[in-house]
Length: 111
Image (cartoon, rainbow, N blue to C red; front, side, top):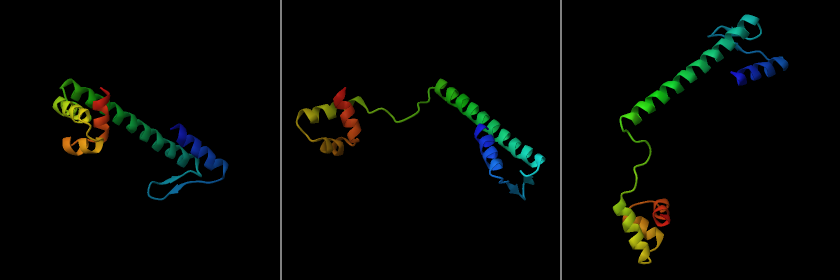
């Protein structure tokens, strides 16, 4: 809403008005400017409501044990990575053999 007010103020200072035929908004009139601000208020309200519902949904999912993000690399693959690297196999060859990314290989080697 703060950005909308700033933009409206800058447009008004530049003597620029917004006219929307379909929505019946003309910022040249005080009623049109008020309607335009109401649209901004409702947009901000909807954004906050969506954010709140999303937070509640994530909390419910986590309480049911649902995991977010990438699945962890199985310990067997981590051990395989360490074994191969111990044998002197190159990082890219390990990636292809084990079927993981280079980041996963570096992570396994750092632990």
